[in-house]
Image 1 (cartoon, rainbow, N blue to C red):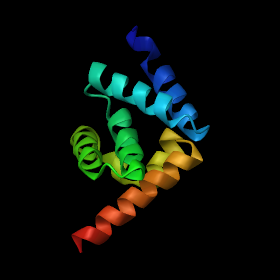
Image 2 (cartoon, helix red, strand yellow):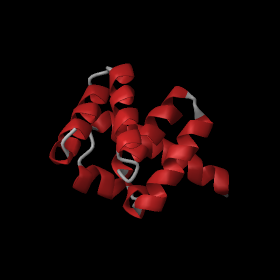
Image 3 (tube, helix red, strand yellow):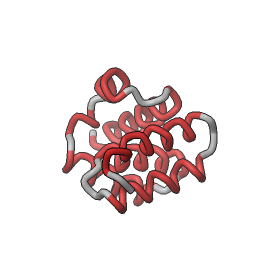
Image 4 (tube, rainbow, N blue to C red):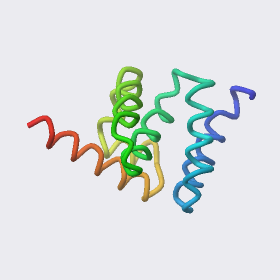
Length: 105
């Protein structure tokens, strides 16, 4: 895949998630995260998707990767306003972040 199209494919994966095509969406996210391990966006999106699916260990692993690469993903406002994730994924990552922070206390 041409590196110029990585964000286009990532945005497609996020749109598919919003439309309810979770399997196709997460498959595309996994592909992009494996092919481009430095792509924090897909690691963060997978963390939300895995959390929603109940795969806690996978979720936390993806989250650790995302945060090592780009700490801005810890800010829900940045995800929503700058990265412009779709509403469903924003809600899911927000729930993930709120549950993670309540577990730390």
